[in-house]
Length: 134
Image 1: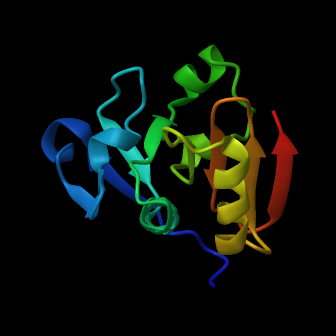
Image 2 (image 1 turned 90 degrees about the vertical axis):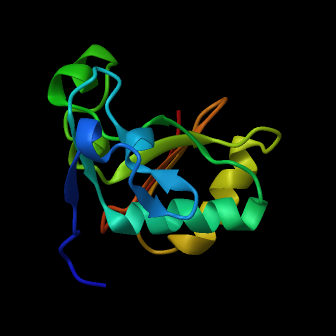
C-alpha cells in the first residue's frame, strides 16, 4: 500500500448516479448539507463493497464525505476522516455494529479507523490504525 490515499472528486448533480462499485453510487457518499462536491477514496468503496458481499445485505451510509461546515455542525473531530472522503459511518439492517466491526477488522488489520457506536460503525482507510468505542 502506498502512503498516499487516492481520493476522487465528484459532482453530486452530474455524477450522483455513477456506480463506484456494484452496490455503491456517488450520491450515497454526498454530504448532508447538499454540497455538490463529493470526495471519495476508491479504497474506502472497496472496503465497503467487501463488507456488502460478506454479509449479503445492503450497507447503508449514514455519513460519508462531510464539508467543514457540516462536520462542525454535527460535532465531528477537527481532523475527521470524513473531511477527506476516506470515511463512512455505516449500518446493516439486522447486523450488529460489533459484527460489522469484527469483519472490518479482517479487512483493515494493521491500518484504518474502526469506531463502534450503538447503531452504526465508523470505517475509514487512514494509514495508521485507530480503534474506539463511541
